[in-house]
Image 1: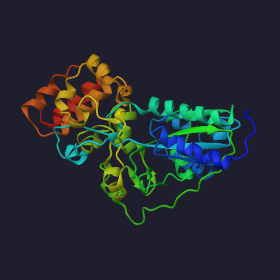
Image 2 (image 1 turned 180 degrees about the horizontal axis):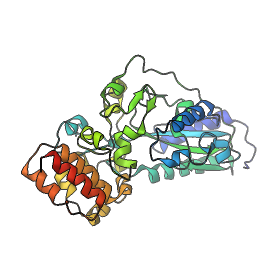
Image 3 (image 1 turned 60 degrees about the vertical axis):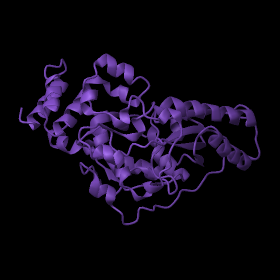
Image 4 (image 1 turned 180 degrees about the vertical axis):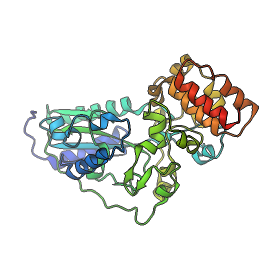
Length: 354
C-alpha cells in the first residue's frame, strides 16, 4: 500500500467523519485491526456447530478476524453506520399480531442496502483521496470474511447486546454497517461500555429460544437463519414457532428497551416496496416465480429464490387460523414441482386437518 506523506491525521479523521455524515451515514468511527477477543469467540462458536449450514463462516481460516491479512497493509478500518428503520405508520407489532399478514424483517422491506452503502463508501474514499492524494482502500458491505459487528463495537458504534446485535445508546439497533479498510495511520476511537445490565427480554421472548445464553446465538434455531439462510427443510418442531414471519425476525430488537430511541431513516431506498409492510400471506403465496423475480428485483429477499419463498409462506399459512381461503391457497401449491415446497405445503395442510 502506498500513500503520499500526510501529517495531520487527527484533522483528517475529523473530516472523514464529517464527510461520512454528508454522504448519508449517521456516523463514522475508526479502529485498528486487532480483533483477538472476537477471533476466540468466533472459533468457539464454530466449534460448537452453532452456525448451522453457514459453512462460509468457517471458510478462509483466520482471515475473518485478521483484517491485516485479508487486505495486506491495512492499518485502520473506517466503520460507518446507516439507519434503516423506515419512517412509516405501519406498526411491526400489529403485523406480528395479525396471523393473516406476512411479517418481513424491517431491513428487507426496501431495496438491498449493499450497493447503496458500497457506492457511498467509494465516494468517501474519493473525498479522502482528494485530501491526501493516492492511498489504498477497500470497501466491504456485509461481504467477504469481515467481522463487521466486532469492528463496529471496537470502533465504539455501540456494544454487542445479549441478542448478539450491536446496540447504540442513542439510535437503538436498526442499522447497517460498512467498512473501509485503509493504510492511513488515523487516530482510533474508543469502544463504549455494555449497557444491557440485568435485562434479558430478548432471551425470554425469542420465539424459538435461539439466544441460548447472553451473547450466544444458536443460528440453527434463529428464524432469520431458518427463513433466509437455510436452503433445505425447516425443522418440524420449529415451524409452529415461526408464526407469520416469512423473511427474517425482529422480535429481539422490537422488545429491546434501547429501541425506544431507534432512529428512523428518511433514505428513499429503505422505504417499503411492493406493499411488503402490510401484505397478506395468501396474496404473496400466489406470486408465480416470474412475479417473484420481477417484484423482488433489487431486494435482499430475491436471493432466497421462489421455492424458499413459498416454503416460508406455507409454514406461515399452516400457522394461520383455519379458513377455506387458507386451505385453498395451500392446496393450490400441493403439486408444486419443488419437493421442498410440497413438503411444507403438506405440513401446512395437516395443521388444518386436511
